Length: 313
Image 1 (tube, rainbow, N blue to C red):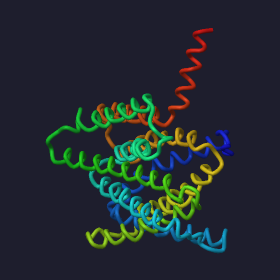
Image 2: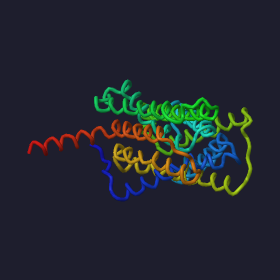
Image 3: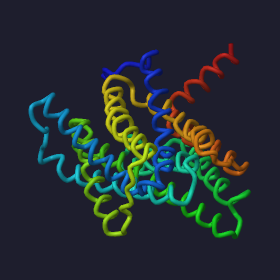
Image 4: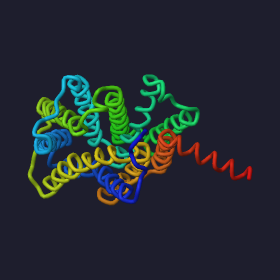
Protein backbone atom coordinates (compact mmCIF):
# COMPACT_ATOMS: atom_id res chain seq x y z
CA UNK A 1 0.00 0.00 0.00
CA UNK A 2 1.29 3.47 -0.96
CA UNK A 3 2.01 5.42 2.23
CA UNK A 4 2.44 8.72 0.41
CA UNK A 5 -0.16 11.38 1.16
CA UNK A 6 -2.39 13.22 -1.31
CA UNK A 7 -1.55 16.86 -1.83
CA UNK A 8 -2.44 19.33 0.91
CA UNK A 9 -2.17 23.12 1.08
CA UNK A 10 1.44 23.02 2.25
CA UNK A 11 2.63 20.77 -0.59
CA UNK A 12 0.71 22.76 -3.20
CA UNK A 13 2.19 26.04 -1.94
CA UNK A 14 5.72 24.61 -1.98
CA UNK A 15 5.20 23.27 -5.52
CA UNK A 16 4.08 26.69 -6.77
CA UNK A 17 7.27 28.16 -5.28
CA UNK A 18 9.41 25.44 -6.88
CA UNK A 19 7.80 25.99 -10.29
CA UNK A 20 8.55 29.72 -10.07
CA UNK A 21 12.18 28.95 -9.18
CA UNK A 22 12.56 26.41 -12.00
CA UNK A 23 10.92 28.78 -14.45
CA UNK A 24 13.47 31.45 -13.50
CA UNK A 25 16.41 29.07 -14.00
CA UNK A 26 16.86 29.70 -17.73
CA UNK A 27 16.42 33.45 -17.24
CA UNK A 28 19.22 33.45 -14.64
CA UNK A 29 21.60 31.58 -16.98
CA UNK A 30 20.85 33.83 -19.94
CA UNK A 31 21.02 37.08 -17.96
CA UNK A 32 24.59 36.31 -16.84
CA UNK A 33 25.76 34.88 -20.18
CA UNK A 34 27.66 38.04 -21.09
CA UNK A 35 29.79 37.68 -17.94
CA UNK A 36 30.01 33.89 -17.53
CA UNK A 37 29.47 31.49 -20.40
CA UNK A 38 26.36 29.31 -19.88
CA UNK A 39 28.36 26.08 -19.98
CA UNK A 40 30.72 27.30 -17.27
CA UNK A 41 27.78 28.53 -15.20
CA UNK A 42 26.19 25.08 -15.16
CA UNK A 43 29.52 23.41 -14.35
CA UNK A 44 30.32 25.77 -11.47
CA UNK A 45 26.86 25.72 -9.93
CA UNK A 46 26.85 21.89 -10.12
CA UNK A 47 30.22 21.67 -8.41
CA UNK A 48 29.32 24.05 -5.59
CA UNK A 49 25.88 22.50 -5.04
CA UNK A 50 27.39 19.00 -5.20
CA UNK A 51 29.85 19.93 -2.45
CA UNK A 52 26.95 21.26 -0.35
CA UNK A 53 25.00 18.01 -0.89
CA UNK A 54 28.03 15.96 0.15
CA UNK A 55 28.44 18.01 3.34
CA UNK A 56 24.73 17.59 4.07
CA UNK A 57 25.00 13.79 3.71
CA UNK A 58 28.00 13.73 6.05
CA UNK A 59 26.14 15.80 8.66
CA UNK A 60 22.98 13.69 8.44
CA UNK A 61 24.46 10.20 8.07
CA UNK A 62 28.13 10.61 9.09
CA UNK A 63 29.03 9.04 5.73
CA UNK A 64 28.25 9.19 2.02
CA UNK A 65 25.68 6.41 1.34
CA UNK A 66 27.68 4.87 -1.50
CA UNK A 67 26.84 1.34 -2.70
CA UNK A 68 28.13 -0.89 -5.48
CA UNK A 69 24.56 -1.38 -6.74
CA UNK A 70 24.11 2.33 -7.45
CA UNK A 71 27.55 3.03 -8.94
CA UNK A 72 26.86 2.12 -12.57
CA UNK A 73 23.39 3.70 -12.79
CA UNK A 74 24.74 6.65 -10.80
CA UNK A 75 27.52 7.24 -13.32
CA UNK A 76 24.98 6.90 -16.13
CA UNK A 77 22.57 9.48 -14.66
CA UNK A 78 25.55 11.76 -14.11
CA UNK A 79 26.38 11.48 -17.81
CA UNK A 80 22.77 11.98 -18.94
CA UNK A 81 22.30 14.95 -16.60
CA UNK A 82 25.49 16.48 -18.00
CA UNK A 83 24.36 16.07 -21.61
CA UNK A 84 20.93 17.50 -20.72
CA UNK A 85 22.42 20.69 -19.31
CA UNK A 86 25.03 20.89 -22.06
CA UNK A 87 22.11 21.24 -24.48
CA UNK A 88 20.39 23.73 -22.14
CA UNK A 89 23.54 25.86 -21.89
CA UNK A 90 24.32 25.70 -25.61
CA UNK A 91 20.68 26.21 -26.58
CA UNK A 92 20.40 29.37 -24.50
CA UNK A 93 23.15 30.90 -26.65
CA UNK A 94 20.73 30.87 -29.59
CA UNK A 95 17.14 30.80 -28.35
CA UNK A 96 15.14 32.59 -25.67
CA UNK A 97 14.71 31.51 -22.07
CA UNK A 98 10.96 31.20 -22.67
CA UNK A 99 11.48 28.78 -25.56
CA UNK A 100 13.97 26.74 -23.54
CA UNK A 101 11.55 26.47 -20.60
CA UNK A 102 8.85 24.96 -22.83
CA UNK A 103 10.99 22.54 -24.85
CA UNK A 104 12.95 21.34 -21.80
CA UNK A 105 9.72 20.35 -20.07
CA UNK A 106 8.79 17.90 -22.81
CA UNK A 107 10.85 15.47 -20.67
CA UNK A 108 7.79 13.62 -19.23
CA UNK A 109 6.74 12.65 -22.77
CA UNK A 110 10.14 11.09 -23.53
CA UNK A 111 10.11 9.32 -20.14
CA UNK A 112 6.59 7.99 -20.72
CA UNK A 113 7.51 6.71 -24.20
CA UNK A 114 10.62 4.94 -22.90
CA UNK A 115 8.81 3.36 -19.96
CA UNK A 116 6.01 2.22 -22.30
CA UNK A 117 8.45 -0.11 -24.09
CA UNK A 118 10.52 -1.10 -21.03
CA UNK A 119 8.00 -1.50 -18.19
CA UNK A 120 4.84 -3.55 -18.95
CA UNK A 121 2.79 -1.95 -16.17
CA UNK A 122 3.53 1.54 -17.53
CA UNK A 123 2.22 1.04 -21.06
CA UNK A 124 0.48 4.08 -22.48
CA UNK A 125 -3.30 4.03 -22.88
CA UNK A 126 -5.14 5.39 -25.92
CA UNK A 127 -5.80 8.62 -24.05
CA UNK A 128 -2.10 8.97 -23.25
CA UNK A 129 -1.12 8.26 -26.86
CA UNK A 130 -3.45 11.10 -27.87
CA UNK A 131 -1.48 13.30 -25.44
CA UNK A 132 1.77 12.26 -27.15
CA UNK A 133 0.22 13.21 -30.50
CA UNK A 134 -0.92 16.60 -29.18
CA UNK A 135 2.59 17.28 -27.85
CA UNK A 136 4.15 16.35 -31.19
CA UNK A 137 1.70 18.66 -32.96
CA UNK A 138 2.63 21.46 -30.54
CA UNK A 139 6.34 20.98 -31.32
CA UNK A 140 5.61 21.13 -35.06
CA UNK A 141 3.54 24.31 -34.66
CA UNK A 142 6.17 25.98 -32.47
CA UNK A 143 8.99 25.06 -34.87
CA UNK A 144 7.53 25.39 -38.34
CA UNK A 145 4.71 27.91 -38.43
CA UNK A 146 4.76 31.64 -37.96
CA UNK A 147 7.76 33.87 -37.38
CA UNK A 148 10.40 31.18 -36.79
CA UNK A 149 10.34 29.89 -40.39
CA UNK A 150 12.25 32.90 -41.69
CA UNK A 151 15.40 32.26 -43.74
CA UNK A 152 17.33 34.91 -41.78
CA UNK A 153 20.45 33.60 -39.98
CA UNK A 154 19.07 34.73 -36.62
CA UNK A 155 15.91 32.65 -37.15
CA UNK A 156 18.02 29.61 -38.12
CA UNK A 157 20.07 29.97 -34.94
CA UNK A 158 16.88 30.21 -32.89
CA UNK A 159 15.61 26.98 -34.43
CA UNK A 160 18.90 25.33 -33.47
CA UNK A 161 18.51 26.57 -29.91
CA UNK A 162 14.93 25.28 -29.79
CA UNK A 163 16.11 21.90 -31.08
CA UNK A 164 18.77 21.78 -28.36
CA UNK A 165 16.00 22.45 -25.83
CA UNK A 166 14.06 19.48 -27.19
CA UNK A 167 17.19 17.29 -26.96
CA UNK A 168 17.68 18.45 -23.36
CA UNK A 169 14.13 17.30 -22.60
CA UNK A 170 14.88 13.92 -24.21
CA UNK A 171 17.97 13.38 -22.06
CA UNK A 172 16.05 14.43 -18.94
CA UNK A 173 13.46 11.81 -19.86
CA UNK A 174 16.21 9.20 -20.23
CA UNK A 175 17.54 10.13 -16.80
CA UNK A 176 14.08 9.48 -15.34
CA UNK A 177 13.98 6.07 -17.03
CA UNK A 178 17.39 5.06 -15.63
CA UNK A 179 16.40 6.11 -12.10
CA UNK A 180 13.08 4.29 -12.43
CA UNK A 181 14.69 1.08 -13.76
CA UNK A 182 17.71 0.84 -11.45
CA UNK A 183 18.69 0.55 -7.82
CA UNK A 184 18.58 4.35 -7.62
CA UNK A 185 14.78 4.19 -7.36
CA UNK A 186 15.04 2.71 -3.85
CA UNK A 187 18.26 4.39 -2.81
CA UNK A 188 19.07 7.74 -1.24
CA UNK A 189 17.62 10.66 -3.20
CA UNK A 190 20.47 12.91 -2.10
CA UNK A 191 22.98 10.35 -3.38
CA UNK A 192 21.24 10.34 -6.76
CA UNK A 193 21.42 14.14 -6.82
CA UNK A 194 25.11 13.98 -5.89
CA UNK A 195 25.84 11.64 -8.83
CA UNK A 196 24.13 14.10 -11.17
CA UNK A 197 25.86 17.19 -9.84
CA UNK A 198 29.31 15.59 -9.66
CA UNK A 199 28.96 14.32 -13.22
CA UNK A 200 27.90 17.74 -14.50
CA UNK A 201 30.77 19.49 -12.72
CA UNK A 202 33.44 17.16 -14.11
CA UNK A 203 32.13 16.68 -17.65
CA UNK A 204 30.79 20.17 -18.35
CA UNK A 205 33.79 21.78 -16.66
CA UNK A 206 36.10 19.77 -18.94
CA UNK A 207 34.00 20.67 -21.98
CA UNK A 208 34.11 24.38 -21.09
CA UNK A 209 37.91 24.20 -20.86
CA UNK A 210 38.30 22.24 -24.10
CA UNK A 211 36.03 24.57 -26.08
CA UNK A 212 37.44 27.77 -24.62
CA UNK A 213 34.15 28.75 -22.94
CA UNK A 214 35.84 29.98 -19.79
CA UNK A 215 34.88 33.66 -19.74
CA UNK A 216 34.29 34.71 -16.12
CA UNK A 217 33.72 38.28 -14.96
CA UNK A 218 32.61 39.13 -11.44
CA UNK A 219 29.73 41.58 -11.77
CA UNK A 220 26.60 42.14 -9.67
CA UNK A 221 24.56 40.26 -12.30
CA UNK A 222 26.91 37.29 -12.54
CA UNK A 223 27.34 36.94 -8.76
CA UNK A 224 23.61 37.19 -8.00
CA UNK A 225 22.81 34.76 -10.82
CA UNK A 226 25.32 32.18 -9.62
CA UNK A 227 24.15 32.47 -6.00
CA UNK A 228 20.56 31.98 -7.13
CA UNK A 229 21.42 29.02 -9.37
CA UNK A 230 23.63 27.31 -6.81
CA UNK A 231 21.85 27.88 -3.50
CA UNK A 232 18.22 28.26 -4.55
CA UNK A 233 17.88 26.16 -7.72
CA UNK A 234 20.45 23.37 -7.68
CA UNK A 235 20.70 22.80 -3.92
CA UNK A 236 17.55 24.05 -2.21
CA UNK A 237 14.84 23.40 -4.79
CA UNK A 238 16.06 19.92 -5.75
CA UNK A 239 16.27 18.80 -2.13
CA UNK A 240 12.79 20.23 -1.48
CA UNK A 241 11.48 18.34 -4.50
CA UNK A 242 12.98 15.05 -3.30
CA UNK A 243 11.55 15.66 0.16
CA UNK A 244 8.07 16.17 -1.29
CA UNK A 245 8.48 13.05 -3.45
CA UNK A 246 9.07 10.97 -0.32
CA UNK A 247 5.98 12.31 1.47
CA UNK A 248 3.38 12.95 -1.25
CA UNK A 249 1.98 11.14 -4.28
CA UNK A 250 4.38 11.61 -7.19
CA UNK A 251 1.68 11.75 -9.86
CA UNK A 252 -0.04 14.70 -8.18
CA UNK A 253 3.26 16.54 -7.73
CA UNK A 254 4.13 15.91 -11.37
CA UNK A 255 0.91 17.49 -12.54
CA UNK A 256 1.61 20.69 -10.58
CA UNK A 257 5.14 20.87 -12.05
CA UNK A 258 3.61 21.74 -15.43
CA UNK A 259 3.20 25.28 -14.20
CA UNK A 260 6.97 25.67 -14.68
CA UNK A 261 6.93 26.47 -18.44
CA UNK A 262 4.23 29.09 -17.80
CA UNK A 263 6.41 30.82 -15.21
CA UNK A 264 9.41 30.42 -17.52
CA UNK A 265 7.60 32.22 -20.34
CA UNK A 266 6.44 35.00 -18.00
CA UNK A 267 9.95 35.43 -16.54
CA UNK A 268 11.52 35.62 -20.00
CA UNK A 269 9.10 38.31 -21.10
CA UNK A 270 9.27 40.35 -17.85
CA UNK A 271 13.00 40.19 -17.07
CA UNK A 272 14.59 39.73 -20.50
CA UNK A 273 11.89 41.44 -22.60
CA UNK A 274 11.74 38.44 -24.91
CA UNK A 275 9.22 38.68 -27.77
CA UNK A 276 6.47 36.10 -28.07
CA UNK A 277 5.09 35.01 -31.44
CA UNK A 278 1.66 33.56 -32.03
CA UNK A 279 3.02 30.27 -33.37
CA UNK A 280 5.11 29.73 -30.23
CA UNK A 281 2.22 30.55 -27.89
CA UNK A 282 -0.07 28.13 -29.77
CA UNK A 283 2.63 25.44 -29.85
CA UNK A 284 3.45 25.89 -26.16
CA UNK A 285 -0.22 25.51 -25.20
CA UNK A 286 -0.48 22.31 -27.26
CA UNK A 287 2.73 20.93 -25.74
CA UNK A 288 1.53 21.58 -22.18
CA UNK A 289 -1.91 20.14 -22.96
CA UNK A 290 -0.31 16.99 -24.37
CA UNK A 291 2.02 16.55 -21.40
CA UNK A 292 -0.86 17.06 -18.99
CA UNK A 293 -2.94 14.46 -20.87
CA UNK A 294 -0.17 11.87 -20.60
CA UNK A 295 0.68 12.55 -16.95
CA UNK A 296 -2.83 13.14 -15.58
CA UNK A 297 -4.46 10.25 -17.45
CA UNK A 298 -5.79 8.64 -14.28
CA UNK A 299 -7.39 11.85 -13.05
CA UNK A 300 -8.84 12.56 -16.50
CA UNK A 301 -10.43 9.12 -16.63
CA UNK A 302 -11.99 9.66 -13.19
CA UNK A 303 -13.33 13.05 -14.28
CA UNK A 304 -14.80 11.63 -17.51
CA UNK A 305 -16.38 8.73 -15.60
CA UNK A 306 -17.97 11.12 -13.09
CA UNK A 307 -19.34 13.27 -15.90
CA UNK A 308 -20.89 10.25 -17.57
CA UNK A 309 -22.33 9.03 -14.29
CA UNK A 310 -23.79 12.48 -13.65
CA UNK A 311 -25.49 12.50 -17.06
CA UNK A 312 -26.95 9.03 -16.45
CA UNK A 313 -28.48 10.25 -13.20
